[in-house]
Image (cartoon, rainbow, N blue to C red; front, side):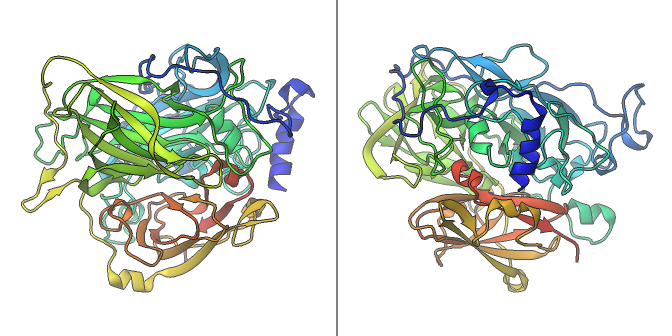
Length: 592
């Protein structure tokens, strides 16, 4: 009913014209096309630049700083988070021509663009950036997301958007609730004082403060904010109820890179507390996607298939199988799986398929407590982020690859590991000798190498936690959570107390299907996987997560503590076909 009412009203706004119809790009009884043949590693890796700051949208609250004529005051909900250090960005969602590969004809995509520039030749959006820290109240980001998508278009997708800042700890109104669409303020979360138009803009407030700050600043407790919960790689994408898969696949995705007083983004930082990880040109986001193309270059998508889309071409930052020139030194790579339904397992290999080790330093929950050395491969599900450091200094040879050896032919799950796979990114070592390298991977604390240390949840806290179970299943061709569909976003499935400890048991009972489950608003700590201690890359005391891959018949127990922000949030499968049909639920954080 929500989808038919709100999105249906969006359809009604537009003149009737079959060109706009978001129908599938192939008939129901047709086979998926084979994409045009391409030659790998002929195009350099695109590296989208960071978004540029723009002037403030609002006068500062409480007379802080000069008042600018014509600028309105901020809304009450945002006023407490704005200050002289707030960074403002303007991002536009638009339709534009894009070149995925020299052998694929240029085609129209939907994508995000930095509004300060006139043209955007990238297949992913501008990099948003900022710094975390509880002292940074009033130093976060305000991002104006403007919708300039065409009302009339061909093919799939719906030009009505809501944007989710994935991995962020933010107000419910800025979280991209799936029915907060421009022009149709959702009675659940949208303040009535903030009008918008159907194809206008919405200002998202991202405070970038450590969880737990609200109690500290209001004097309700002496507990200090949790400085260990700082993500390093986030992303933003469309989150429209029922159409997320189509809109994200069409191109509405971008990355955010964050820093703080430990992970400063300066590898020559003289501060003894700074980690000095590979930085600047040697800190590279990699947005991984798979797509399928028609002969005319247009992306092919089956809107009737809700099992999960699988493509036959592999893109990194919007280019098919690009290459990257590297020096003999350490690099930090931030992997984001932005595919609709494909899961990857990446190996670092050479021309002879020999494998080499990497060092994992982060998940979507930010830096690990300690680096994990000698990683031979890593698996990454949809929406997960994994960061690794690769040291090219002493690797034998001059050509290396990121190779995906996890075979997958359908949205259900991967088929299994193979001895060789698709090389999606080539590394070409250039330059004479060893390059200057002032970076390091963690720092020595006297007993071990550490990144961002934190203690596991205490036993007495676990004993007080409210326990809930959520079963991810399939019913009558639709995807459910505890037997319910996403249409039930009208009411919460759970109402956790603000700042109260919770343990959620997430269970996959869907007959062999795999589900990456994303929980909004807070990072979780994985206590158990299938009743046992989980692997180091997701274990409490080592890692924090916001997406939990449930393989066939698996379960995980995750500790949450929803702090600071009340209001409705969602949790859902991040196989976008499953999310759209209809594996999503709402939870409301409430006061006692």
